[in-house]
Image 1 (tube, rainbow, N blue to C red):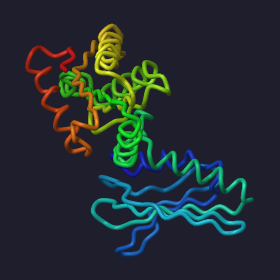
Image 2: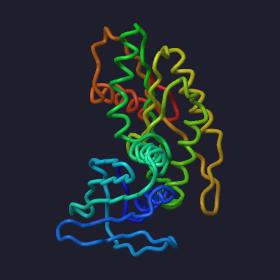
Image 3: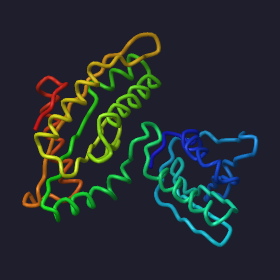
Amino acid sequence: MNFDNLSQAVESVQQLRNFFKSIRIWCQQPEKLIYESRDEDTSEILSVDALAFQNATLSISRDTLKVNLAVTIDGRPCVIELIQRSTKEENATSMRSIQELIITDPLTNLYNRRFIDEQLPRELNRAFQNGEPVSFLYADIDLFKKINDRHGHVAGDCVLRDVASIFQNQIRRKDGWAARYGGDEFLLCLPEISQKAAVQMADRIRNAIAQKDFQGKSKTIRVTCSFGVQTLYQADDVNTLTQIIGLLDRKLYKAKATGRNRVIV
């Protein structure tokens, strides 16, 4: 999980205040406390450039749940420390919340790259064992850099959230899942969905985005997305994320090169 800054990370971690009374962030070299939550929800935060989750160690004893998240902040090794003394049932609830946080993109509330890496192989194995295909949609917001340049990064973040919301609304839970692959790129995994159905879904999402009025600071922003679609069967012998993104990226490039706001199969 990647955060642009410590404040964004703290905002995400604060979602767990219902379960963890003690939330600290330690710098390890040199050892120094750089963030600590307080009962009145105030805190002192050092300004840093980046925060990236690398792994998480979770442990539960009879009455204590402790979570250590190993991170790097501005190139320095750090640890997010979460401690809660509670019942076994409350600890289980906290564990689920932590697991959800680790696989969720904090800006868009879609799944993140960590979830993709873990879940995609499972989807392929499950579908292939049943003799079914898996379809993928790879989406990119057209001219997103110009949106940031003209309207500011706050407006750009709003566009990302609203586009992600359209993905969530257009994909039913049984159809598959949507994740933020990185930047303004999104990956949608559709197990047991044929190429024809996947293309129809991509066109439906593309139209919903093109028809929506996105709100900037002082004016409406019109946004479009380009899509690459790939349907895989076991006989295709494609089974890694790198291979899948390679296939999708070529189709997405063609969609951009031939006018944008279109779906390429």
